[in-house]
Length: 131
Image 1 (cartoon, rainbow, N blue to C red):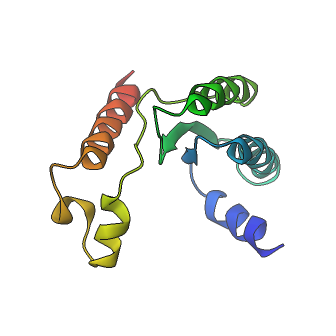
Image 2 (tube, one colour):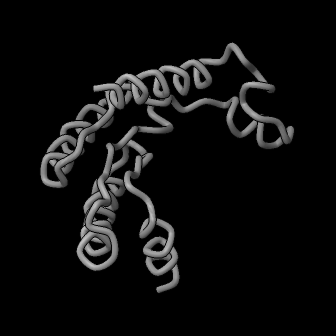
């Protein structure tokens, strides 16, 4: 498989990774698989590698399944000795529209909810690094 090999190479030299994930059933199994890959990289190439945490992207808070997936993700993050960031990035029509228009989100619609979500995530991340 090419993807895991490329992933090994990419994360072998970093200290921490932040993993964006969707709040979907198949994403929870992906988190587990990714955790196994990171454990292997840690064991063989980079013992200092740490998963800083997971952040939900394309999140739809009104979906009942989102809370259930959040509970599953919290169990998985306990197993992987990491955390789920409390900020989530909501699903938005602005992201694909900005891509179509060949603009960044901030240039396309600086007041959109998804831009505010990303700003909130960066603030949470910076606050987390200070502690």
